[in-house]
Amino acid sequence: MRPPQNERELEDLLSRPNKADVECAQRISGDVMILGAGGKMGPSLARRVKRAFEAAHAGGRVVAVSRFSDSQTRMELAQDGIEPICCDLLDARQIMQLPRCQNVLFLAGRKFGSTGRSDLTWAINTIVPARVAEQLSASRVVVFSTGNVYPFVPPGSRGSVETDTPDPVGEYAQSCLGRERVFEYFSRDHGLSCLIFRLNYAVDLRYGVLVDIARRVYAGEPVEIAVPFLNAIWQGDANSYAFRSLELCQSPPRLLNVTGPEKVSVRSVAEFFAGRFHKPARFDGESGGGALLSDASLCHRLLGPPEISLETVMEWVARWIEVGGATLDKPTHFEITDGRY
Image 1 (cartoon, rainbow, N blue to C red):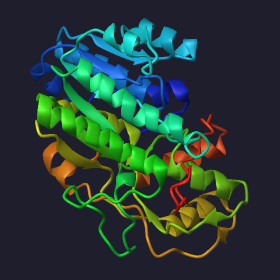
Image 2 (cartoon, one colour; image 1 turned 30 degrees about the vertical axis):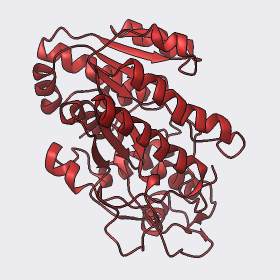
Image 3 (cartoon, rainbow, N blue to C red; image 1 turned 90 degrees about the vertical axis):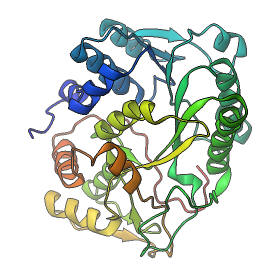
């Protein structure tokens, strides 16, 4: 597959529906609303759903809800036939005014800056879900969560599975488990149909763990190896899984780990980029005894394997860095072991 040459081509690839997406759009009924649509994944996910509906000749509308601090994103979504709605999800009155859509993708959340404003992190990650779940109890909801709710596992492990007991490290991860428990309560006690989408490191060419490592190698900076292994998945595949997970919602909620099939060595990734950039691979610290790893076998059995391999993404990232492609400058902090973001 030809690598994206610029951001326009990148956005087109991330939002291009596959056959499974179109088939899902043919089966699904009702509109789709994306809450928290102004973030890293929201715009391309909204476009992918819209394009799937168009390819399926289905009549569902796509509603994108965000504060839209970037008015350009709001305008571009509207130009693509998506209905943008400005909404502060911390305001209960604004939530009450949202349209009642049969299908909801809940992307709203807070991670970075959590250490400085833990109160705000907890409010966004637990109070907002409670208000949304109460107002949209007749919808089916895919709730974005994170592999951070699991404990660190030995590097030799295949990763945590959905039946493992959560043991989050740090207030950010704890608040994410809080978000899950809020939706679980509304699902069990109020019949809300939902799925907990435990995503572990989505990547595109402008952000993600691969970009973090590549940029450090390219700049001649050391790569920290306190967390020796990680998981990652191409954002386009994560977008597809999120949309198609609407058909897997249930009460009580289904749990689903979402990531690639590989356990990725941080050292090996750094050495790959070092070879591509003709620069030495430098490392900082000592390899730790644990890693946040998720086993996504269930996701792959239910929804199929990812379409874009991590090897392909690494090649694309290397080229993107070499030609000076744009980045979002939002590091993942994959090397953090104490949960302080």
